[in-house]
Amino acid sequence: MDTKKFYPLNDTGLIRNCDPKGCGHFGASRGDHTHRGIDFITSPLQVIKAPFDCKIVRYGYPYSDDPSFRLFEVRGMGEYSKYSAKVFYLNPLHDVGDSFKKGEPFAISDDVRRRHGGDITVHVHFELYIDGKLVDPTEYFNSIKV
Image 1 (cartoon, rainbow, N blue to C red):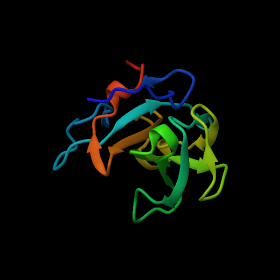
Image 2: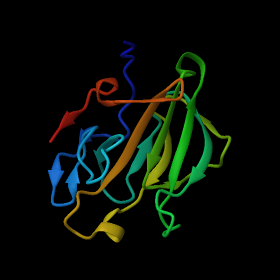
Image 3: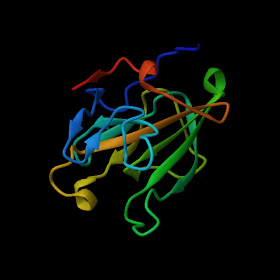
């Protein structure tokens, strides 16, 4: 298994543990499905950094009924070309097509409490794909679960 380490999305690199709204680890129960990524604890308006050399390929919306929340889809470049990721709860700093080196700022975090209330830990959601297949991203980061 390839375990190339990625740059943490923010300065702490902490992964959300459990709160009244759920848990932030890959595979956590979400009622009728499981959590497809990991949640990095953030503060609202915190700078979010590129996990690997990548290019923004599209912006989307994690909720069909609320266009105020955004998701970014990025595709790896160079030695990271087999990777892609979806990152939720971000505000854009750049345009689709812009590229970034690992660790460069590429977005600002949003505040998920606007949708889920004050008892959820503010976070950015990260899903990782290798050659288009969803994988557990945990081992790709030197992150700690809190």
